[in-house]
Image (cartoon, rainbow, N blue to C red; front, side, top):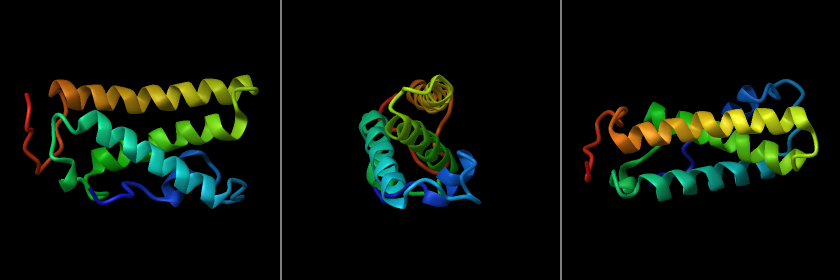
Length: 116
């Protein structure tokens, strides 16, 4: 596994924080690390995760989407209803892609599933 699967800039763009940069890089990087750990834990039964890296667009997309969700929860701690709703939507987007990889609807191009 070649962590990180996404970059702080991708997280900032998804959260529309690219210009103002109000979110701290340390928190963003920690959120990416947590997201990547979740990806590895979820997909290790289906793929050899040591082959994962940021060049696989589906893994990259899941990483920054999940990192955004984690970051929103960390930053706003669910006190702001709008932030909580956005956090849930991002989490569900990432989770849905993980489930599609799990059931074989989606596949990581170039990698062979180790369990079907």
